[in-house]
Each structure stands twice: as structure tokens, then as C-alpha cells.
Length: 405
Image 1 (cartoon, rainbow, N blue to C red):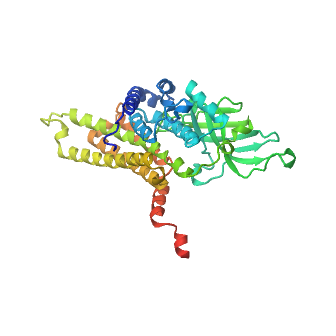
Image 2 (cartoon, rainbow, N blue to C red; image 1 turned 135 degrees about the horizontal axis):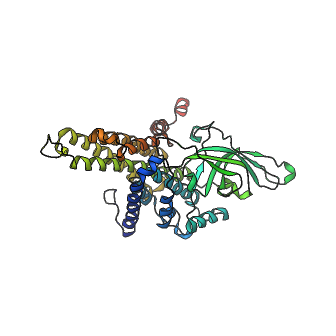
Image 3 (cartoon, helix red, strand yellow; image 1 turned 180 degrees about the horizontal axis):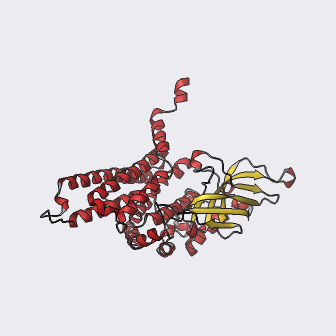
């Protein structure tokens, strides 16, 4: 099977039909949500009713048990409708997938989370970025602090930025610096980690959302600040202790980046489709045919198709390769796929707007929204410099070791 032949099974066809129907519904609402900067909560009610929010959850936990390949294709289609919604869903599917992927047994706190997701449409995302540190991918130490108490419980205080999907989330995975206030008399084992991840329910006392999100890109993503004011949680909230690392965890964790890249490439596909629609229908009185017959328009469309094919082949090809051989997909290749998808999408949207001309700048045109939304992809990890560096190191090896040799 290749990306050109997908979908091949009835189940895959049904998944794309569901994603397509949702995408079309969300696209009809996107203009209003974007204009008002309003979080599209109704979209997530629709996603829950369709069973889409449990795609990355195994069947034995009540989910759909979709493969990575299925998720990439579904998110590619969903991203063509409303990029903000697709981004929120991507974060949710990715984080629940990372929590349960490859684990034969799960701690009760995660089982309860999965049950809440199936029954009530609960959603989850991480909250790791901060005003002072920026993205944790750059290595900054969290100023949000989790302090262990003598009974093993935790008190968490801090503020997180870019909490995507904030108003739809029931749980946050919060990255914290760890402080131990127990002492030897508590009888608790000493903590080895200086930082860790904690599962924080939205319903916990001291948790609130601060509506700070007011940007030109992904306006409907609700990427607000998360405020944690002396939030008291039980010992089980420290999920790093509940979920020990698995063999090959880096590859299993990184490959979910393909799902993120798929949503962004979906924006490019939507822009391409709008440009084709316009070119076929636009016929100024200076021409006997539509502008689709004009050589420079054909040149732009041809360049769009090449860029789209390049990104699709890389993205879907890696997802299919992973489904056949997990060990064969290096994290650097995932970063390269994301780099290609986003940067090619930027160029595809630019070319699409050139095909349409000044009309693409109208606020009634979806192209101006695609133009703004795709910019967010440049700032989702891995950023371009990190992706290119990882790819180069994969080829060149470790310079320090080469010097010693």
C-alpha cells in the first residue's frame, strides 16, 4: 500500500468519511470563529459524538484503536476544514497516545482518564511553556513548582502559556520543577528527578484559565494561559513515577510528530483546492476561457502539485513505514517530515494566493486565514533549526567522537 492507494479497507474509508464530514462542518463555521477570535466549543462536541476523540485509544480501553497511518490521514483531512480545531485535536490524540502506546498495564489514574474520555469526551493536552522559559524544547527549567508534602501529596504553583485547547480540556500534563519538603522522617523514598510531569484535572481547586490568546494565527485554538495557585493533588498525580520509560521510548514518542505535520499540510491542501476552484471558474472578459488556460497560472499550479506530492510522499510514507517496522523510523526523519510539510505548505499557500490574486486578501476568502494559520507551524517543535541539525547529525555522526578517533 502507498499513500496514493489509501484508504484500502472499509474501516479506513469510514474514518476518512467521518473526518471529511467533520472538516466540512467546521469549515462552514471557521470564518465566524476566526473573525470573533472565539473558541469553537461546538466542534469538540461534534468530535466526541463521532468518536473521533478516542481514535488513538486502544480498543481494549474503549477507543477506536486507529493506527498511526490512519491518524495521519484523518488529521490531514480534518486540517482542511478548520486548522485551529485540528491542532487542538492533534495535541489531544498525541498525548493520550503517548501515555498508553506500548504499555500492557496502566496505572489506575490513567485508566480513569481513558474512561472519562470515552464516556464524557474528556480531552487532554500538555502545559509546559512558560513566560520566562519559552518552549521546553530549548531546555529551560520550569518555574512552575511541584512541592512534595510529608504524606506524599503535591502542591503545584505556577503559570503556563500556550495551553492549546484550554477551554475544551479536562486534564493538563503540567511540566514542573520538583522540590521535596518531606525530609527523612517521612519515610518516603528520596526523589531522583529535579523536574517531572503531573496530571492536573481542570476541576481541581486553584486551576483557572486566563484568556490571553489574541493572535492573528490559529485564532480559534484557545491557546490561553493556565494558572495554578497552590493546587493540591494526590501522590498519583506524578505520572512520571506511574509510567516508567519503555524500551525505544524516544522513537515511539517522536513519531507522533507526523500527526502534527499532517494537520498543517491539510491547510496547504485546502489552499490548493481553493486556488484550483478559482482558476477554473474565473473568466475575465479579456479571455475566452477561464484563467486555468493561462500559462503562468498553470506554472504556479504545477509547482503547487510538486510541493504537495513531495510532502505527502514523505509524511505518509514514514507513517506507513512505521506501521511496518517501528525501529526503522528515526526521530530525525520525523523532524524532516514536519520541516517539509510546514515549509512546503507556506510556499503552496503563497502560490495559491498568487493564482487568485488580490481577491485572496479579502476577509471573506479562506486563503487569508490559511496564510495566517500556517505560520503557527513554524513555531511548533521541532523548529526548523532543530530539525535540520538533527538530520545533519544523523548523517555526519557525533563530531566530538570523530575528533577523538
